[in-house]
Length: 190
Image (cartoon, rainbow, N blue to C red; front, side):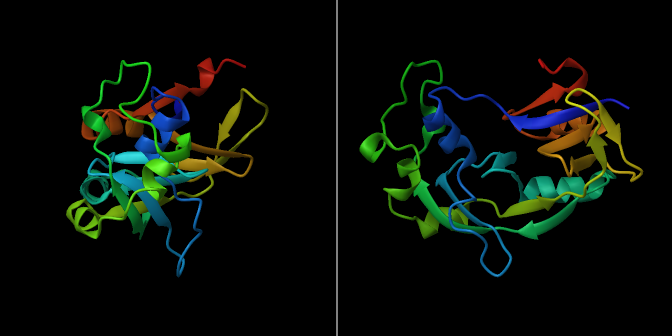
């Protein structure tokens, strides 16, 4: 079975581009068991890994997954704690620098140094955390052994990666916007 690592696309502008794309889920911790999401808007990727290892999807993608027959997905709502208005999707992604740098040139200040817009947060789609079961293990740095569960997305106890089947890879490529990448485990550079 072909397995891929799911990750987000490399952005221009290093950490500045990353924070604009993925936002933050690891700064505030959970509230009543729910992730607190901080990001720019109005853009929200269909599917993204935020924080150190939180997989998020929009409400429309969640509904499609629930109807798709894909296995291994459970969802929890996410609190949109802070959404600042930075419409970076209109910026020149080929440019050496972003359209503007945030206060103190700290990437997180695209979010934290600007006011929260509840109006914008309410207009954006609901966001869901994807809860993923462990299924398999890395025998060494290049060899992954799939577990016994019949799932299309999985984690391992020995990595923070989200691993997906070819079926899910193709589904994401055909049903989600283009902000993810897939690394073939057979072709990893180490």
